[in-house]
Amino acid sequence: MEQGDWLLALPGRKVPEELQGVRDLCKAPRAPGLAPALPAAPAPQSSPGRAAEPDQEGWVCQARQAPGGLGGTGAEWCSWQLSMAGWRGPATLLAFLLLCPLPSPGCPAVCRCSSGEVDCSYRALRVVPDNLPTNASAAWLGYNHIAVLKAHAFRSLPALQNLSLRSNVLVSVHSQALAGLGALRELDLSNNYLTVLTAETFLPLPGLVTLNVGANKLGQLPPEVLKALPCLQELFLHSNALRSLHASVFLNLPALRSLTLQGNPWACTCEIQPLFLWIMGNRDKVQEENLILCRFPEHLNQYPLLAIGNESFSHCQESLLHPRDYAFFLLIGPASFLASILICLLLGSLAMAYNHLLNELCYW
Image (cartoon, rainbow, N blue to C red):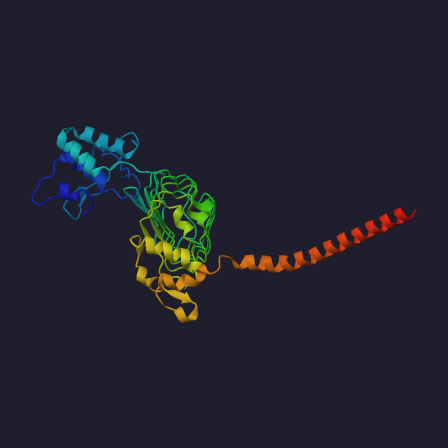
């Protein structure tokens, strides 16, 4: 049954002739997300030689042509139909609102648009469509073949709050790819092939609340990457290639309340101790903490990180020097020793020359 037939084609109900025009308008074929198609206005008489045929519900739909080539928007045509019917009142207004939806901005031909949502998933897209509706509040672009997000990929979508690009083949995101999405609150980049994220990428998203970059190939996440997201509450980092992660990453996220870290090849060495201590102090924020498993060293493979215990890191306190510091001292030590010998030799030579000069003066 077409949209609106439930109102006008109830069993045993005689449909007023005044509403025939409204029904015909709303039964006219139209593309999803676009304004209603504009059928022509009723002609004074049926076209000769063409008989009217009842449709599935018993309606009689005839070819129509507007007098004088009437055109205009869907709202104008509906208004014309109602005025021609001469049947005004609350019931007519209700039928108009129910059966004649307001026009909406254009929708890409490969997508479906409804109530501010743009669904372009499962369309084998290789690039982001150019003509996304400017009033869209949600855009679903998952399960396509998009590999690169270029600069200004979404142009200006000031009302967009939810953007999903999950399960594509993304390998890179330009630092200006998300420019113009200042109202975005949820971003899903999961199940792709991203290896690195830059701080500039998230600068246009100060109000972002949820970021999902799980199931990618991220090998590191510098603290400055998420510094521009003070409102972030949910962060998904599961199933990446992270071996370590400094706890200072989370110091820039004061609103964080949910975090996933499982599925990464964590190296349970002294370097992971700051992350271990942060998790121990924020266990209410970490999801599935028992699935955060060590991959290295070999004797701790598949061992839960939190089961190691703080005492396992006691040997890490014996030395406060980083390996780079040892290298520095190994290089600077011998060099300073040789320099000191040369300085001593120089000073000794000067002293001997001075004594020799004094002896010669005394002799004269």
